[in-house]
Length: 263
Ligand SMILES: Cc1cc2nc3c(=O)[nH]c(=O)nc-3n(C[C@H](O)[C@H](O)[C@H](O)COP(=O)(O)OP(=O)(O)OC[C@H]3O[C@@H](n4cnc5c(N)ncnc54)[C@H](O)[C@@H]3O)c2cc1C
Ligand code: FES
Image (cartoon, rainbow, N blue to C red; front, side, top):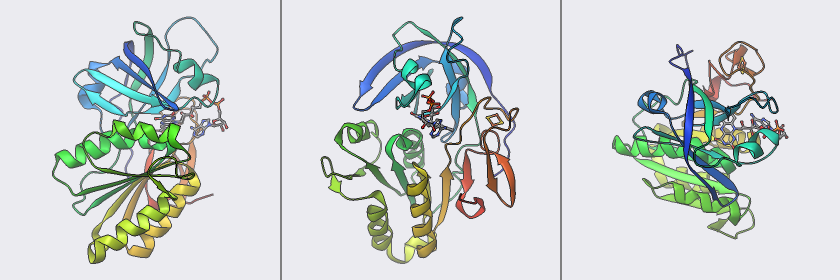
């Protein structure tokens, strides 16, 4: 995957929707300039506007949906920065830098097998809709720990989704890697022409990539490195890929599975 010249800018964006979706929080804001050019797999760096210095740094959030001049993100509250984001009220203004990153390469033609784990599903919804809109065969599998997270799968409106939970409270009681094996087996010889698009916890992505390799399929993975600047300035987000250190923000976050060195 190549480094993409930045089209990003910093915008002050009013929030027009803010609601809980199970364990996550959906925020929609007006960001016409970002919406006009955003591609699946890109992300924004986001924080509340205003003088508050804590948290100081914006947080990276995958672009979950684009509708007209609206950009939507889906936030899992895991720490101070994300909990503050879930306090968003309609009318609040957010400081949004984006769109950032390379996004997924959509040029393939084989069956697109989308594999998401937990909130890693967030950027995959835009991807699924875009690929389906182009007429590509799309198979989508999402795995969650439990029902309160899995209900967010309702946000996938454009494609059928196979859901599993670890405790069986929604969808199949299984790991998403099991669904993936079934999907690739079901594809038969076409599995070798398929392409995986993966986003989720590290262990899950690694298992998905290993399965793809066994079936001869390509895979693109979106990594969730810790980020401070989002634009290649701080070197805080480096990953090993292609035998060198690369910034996940402006040389990723999407990498070909074959070039990524797992740690
Ligand atoms: C390109 C990209 C896209 C992302 N998209 C989304 C998204 O759509 N929705 C979403 O909810 N989250 C997303 N994340 C992860 C999100 O940015 C982090 O969870 C967030 O920055 C944590 O900030 P915090 O202050 O709440 O947590 P902190 O207090 O900083 O950390 C809380 C816990 O989360 C872990 N953590 C912190 N940052 C990351 C990270 N980048 N990846 C994984 N674990 C982390 C910490 O190790 C710690 O255990 C994305 C990350 C990247 C790099
Ligand atoms: S987040 Fe600063 S270089 Fe990537």
